[in-house]
Amino acid sequence: MSLKLQFIKCIFCVILYLLTCLLFLQLKAKLNLIKHIYIEESNKIKEIDLSSTMFPYNKTSVNSNIKLSRCDRVKLESNYQQENGLLLKQISNTCVKYNLKTPLVKKHFLYSPKHKSLYCWIRKVASTSFTTLFSNIQEHRNMNSLTPHSSKELQHLTNDSNIFKLLVVRHPFERLVSSYRDRIEDNTKYTDQAWIYTKKIYHFTRPNLFRSNKTTGSFFQKIFTRDKRLQIVPTFKEFIEWLLQESPEHDDVHWNQYYTHCALCNINYSFILKLDHYTFDQINYIFSKFGIDKNNMDLPNLEQSKGGCTDFKLTCKYFQNLTHNTILKLHERYKIDFEMYNYDLDKYLLC
Image (cartoon, rainbow, N blue to C red):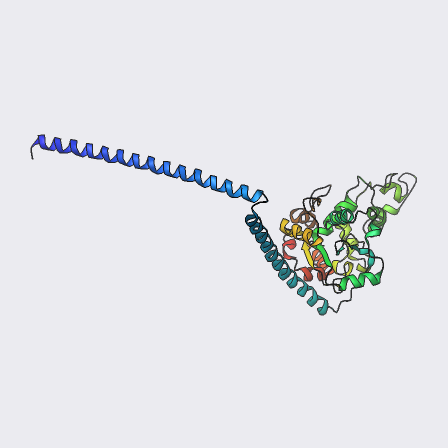
């Protein structure tokens, strides 16, 4: 093949390549145009569908949304009932295992006749939030007016399947640290617990503080300010050492056992919310069972507190000052609550 023919062939290949590229670019441009038109048309269709659901004359669209919403609610309620059933079974087994008797205490419950709801409050387990909620829906500020009128009425309510019975719990150790932080450690305010129990704690852990003279003053002068706030705060370790040698029967409501406080062996609760890992769907479910509109009623932050949320990480910092033996004794004290709600101990031994 001559040099001239090779040159012509090369030129032809280049021209063919350029034409192919040009055709490809034109095709790509057309495809992009078609895609753009399709997206615009799709958006128009979505806008039409959206507008149709916003106006009352399109009954078919509105009814479809209602049916879907009801379907979701039914599925959600079914899941919660199944989970709650397993938890109630665990509680029942624990009651049988230890042959437990848990009497009803009227003052531990709030009742809303209008919403057919019964709630057992537990201090340091979002009790302020739910008590406020009950107060708002009943339009009462006096908590005494929210309790059942008599023990007989309470017994009747607990046996009534039409009453929604709510219990809220959290890990016993997190609640214990939260109670200590709020009622003992925080000396910016007066608390009954600091005033009552600090003397007992120091009798056990620092008896020398009770030796008074003209220079140091009396025990109360050394420990408290004039407005009864703590000047010398017991450590968490001291608080626990004192607590472990006390009888659980005399526990303050801020650190007593759940199963005795809320009569777990006497009541089949409709729903048990575990505050450690609750979801907003669960809160919405509770609102729906209360029969209230979540858009017209605000529930305060369940984990809100002055010193911040007492979670596992913070609880672990306090438990680092306790020996393994002390933690095991503490677990023994609250073992019923641990077993009833399947709470974990091991992670606190690793703090």
